[in-house]
Image 1 (cartoon, rainbow, N blue to C red):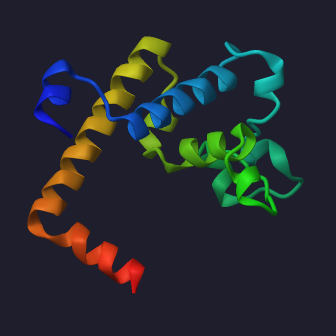
Image 2 (tube, rainbow, N blue to C red; image 1 turned 90 degrees about the vertical axis):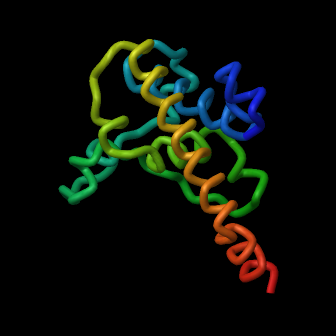
Image 3 (tube, one colour; image 1 turned 180 degrees about the vertical axis):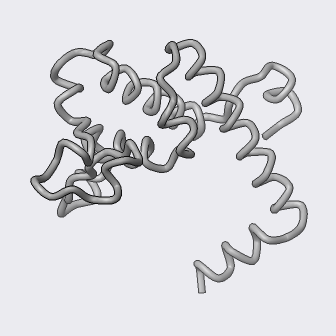
Length: 132
């Protein structure tokens, strides 16, 4: 993250997309979104007949897709982003503004952590391993 973005308290584009997606899922789960979006956010506790351990984690069901195009849809991307958030963010029944503040703080801290790892050289090692 550039110093200008940090001083303005702006997120990079890829984190802004994550932020908007997580806020939309939050709205779906709290009845603040339109029904055509809400139907794509199914809690694991409501999904099946069996009681799973994941039912208490406030995670969402991620539908399977056959194409990478389907992986980019809200019905897949929304639950994926939501499930990747820490439990304390997913489990809070706070107002929308409080959720946004906590989420933005989390994303800023995550970016600072990645920047620290990059400065230590870990990110380049991970990228080399993935390429090879």
